[in-house]
Image 1: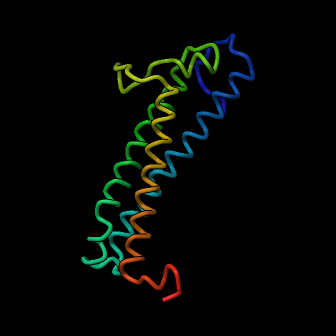
Image 2: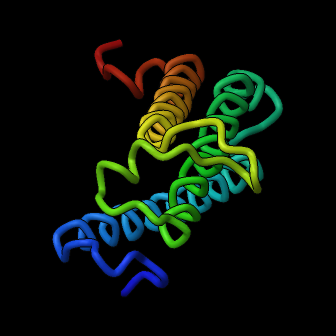
Image 3: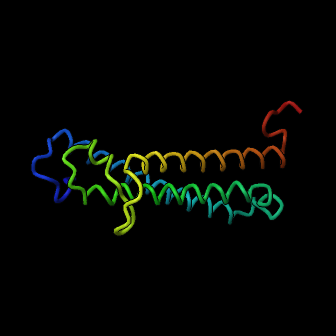
Length: 145
């Protein structure tokens, strides 16, 4: 997919790097939306009775906030690719981006923040699930009881 309105003097290699960043960021945003939907579906399951849900509520909250923030930072990156006038990938990564006219974070930092929020969310959701499994049925984890 060719990106619109990029400078004419950008090299093919630099253009390809921008396209790859754009495509992989779009994939990440879709993954975050899917995972947020899965968390809400999990909350609605009968398996998560009030007692079981109580064991995971903070983990779920941190997970949802982390995935949402990852989506926000990913959106900053993806929406800035078509708007850039940078003549290289490295110059684009150094550009400041933000919503509307507010430019407050570099693309590179937005990418790092996106990934950090995602992995913190995954850690919270995984530890919450393991904690709930362990407290509800300890034999399910080790099998040696």
